[in-house]
Image 1 (cartoon, rainbow, N blue to C red):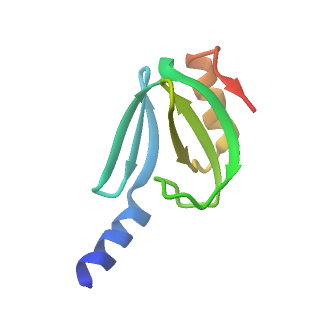
Image 2: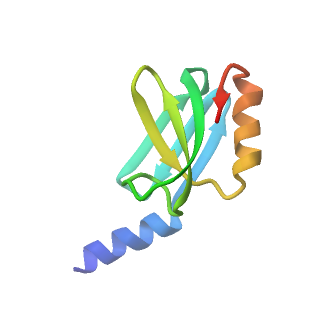
Length: 95
């Protein structure tokens, strides 16, 4: 039980999304770490979803990358985050 509580607090304290060069790094606790090349992101969609994902809020954005991959994230300043991604990859379609 203590391990589960510790992992939940770790996710609450260590969920972040950073853009380093041309790569988006997603971290959610010790279990979830992803690196997505910004050039592979094709679409950003605003979603309210309860699907399991590295997002702490119900107000999320969906990033489509590759042919069929999606990840839901919830950055604090969504509009600024989207603008940063578009500045690196202007071909991203936002809906």
